[in-house]
Image (tube, rainbow, N blue to C red; front, side):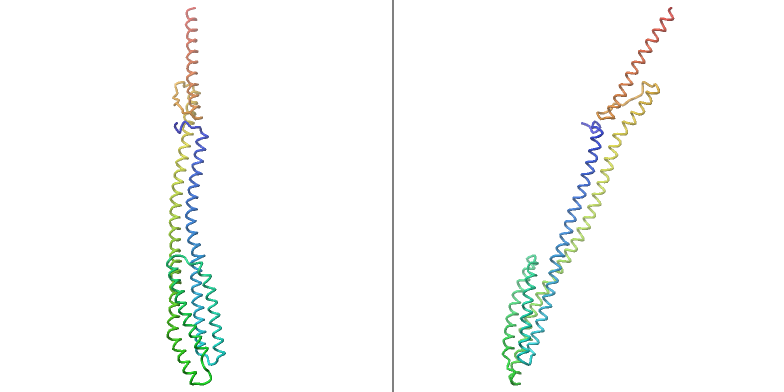
Length: 290
């Protein structure tokens, strides 16, 4: 069946349906691209940036702990040692609590590997811290001589093995923070690229939709107006008495049926006029014989 044979209502309905389908396709493309952008944005907002923030907070807590250790090393009385030891224990508790909020955010093998190294170095640092605390609690503050001996040993451990363990922990935290910062930048760049791709895709799809809609509109309009124009010209010619006017054959739609009806009307009128003319000529011939 040819398109021209379809009824006008079917043509208009098909055109409207095509426009709806094109609009739906455009909407689906937009939704897919928006979902990708949202996924990247959500990863940045709910994982990467909080991870950067928490690793930064961990470094702050470790620095505060280190200052408390320095106070413990430089204490000049047992109550001072006890006070700074309690501060160290409090910082350790805060660090453990912050770690519990960071661990669910760990994503990827690389980050897990770095975090495992951090836990190992933290354990080594905790061992050195325990030794440092034990020595500090055992310092004899009764005489200057014993204070100098134990104080020197305490200072050497603080500046030596303890410092190395602390630096190792800090470096690992720096690696964790750097990894999450770079991942956030990468996710942001991917979101920007997805946005650019989405914009280009939408513009192209919109252009295709507009072009197809225009083609459909022109096609349906021509399918309706051209037969109507033929019908109008044929009707005028017949009304003016031209019973030989050309009436093109129509299709099976309403306008085609109208053209076919006009052609049948023209042919019937031509036969009627021919019959009337023949009868008139017969009457005229009979009259002349009388």
